[in-house]
Length: 437
Image 1 (cartoon, rainbow, N blue to C red):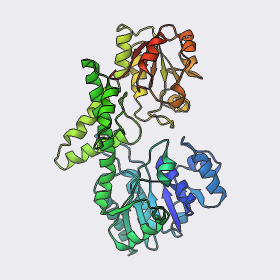
Image 2: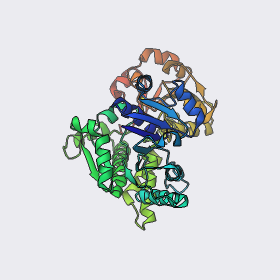
Image 3: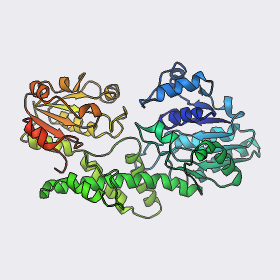
Image 4: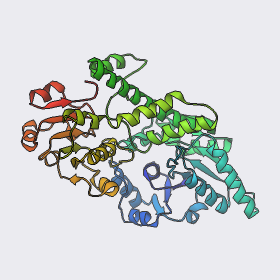
């Protein structure tokens, strides 16, 4: 079976490599010629554990191809996936210009029945816009080529995307015809063999499912951060509270970890887009809008704790940040809390030293040389008045405390992800500040 995937970003490249690994013949398409040239040379544009090996193996096996021209493969494929970006517009809505451009190209060039599947995260009703664009283009050509549109939202976690794709807890597919359902069933047959759940539904429900899932996870995070902040005021320990409520089978423990806010390419964008969809239809998503407000406030919590620990005076102080990416096992800094903390520290006159295992180049790309880039957590801490942990990388979890003492000028440690044992850190001679403890 031959398919094409338009967009070689995070979703498109991971999906393409994984579909190829399952035996499909996959052509990944991107209008960015420079990116395609790099992929043809084996250079992967994103960091995702195991992705470079997966791509190399399937390119070598002749199952994975790259091109900048969708038309060059359109006659050979049965399914085209649209996995292009849907960045947030100024009003929080999802910008669909790339999604609709794929639809235009599709409509201008198909010559046989082909299924166009939206894998990008798009608002409810996008499929109708896509179909209208395709019909418009076919009308201009004077053609009556049959086609279908489907929705197949992705549920990949950065840092564990390959495992999530190959062993999904569910695959959501929105279709409108039996022909499209048959084709998607054929595509996902390997997953059905392994007893993974493929959930077929109407397209609007599939589009809504993606937003609802991300909004629920974001809600749990913001809820726990709100509880943690209250714990700080009343003297409770949020870790004990988390264990207490997580033991309830109706609640569970996942996504109940307090910290300095969520970031990345999904939660911030999707929460904003869902709230905007509500407003478009005259309905206010009260909970969702509160989730976003809490998260934006939470991104400054580490800065506020640093201010308190340093007596309100940051000018001339040196602060080390451990972690830049919004989460471990990725170099993604989109909406990362570290960017907010860096900005506020610099504006307050502090010197900022940073270290992240994989996101240093991405940080340079975003903010240039405004901070001091270092090669380890200890080098970052040299001469620092305070260390703030922003990303819970595994290699940060057990530092040599004596070495850290030697490097630092003062002894303040702000734990933005609650990964350290409070009593141990205090016993080692540090002044310890965490979230809700």
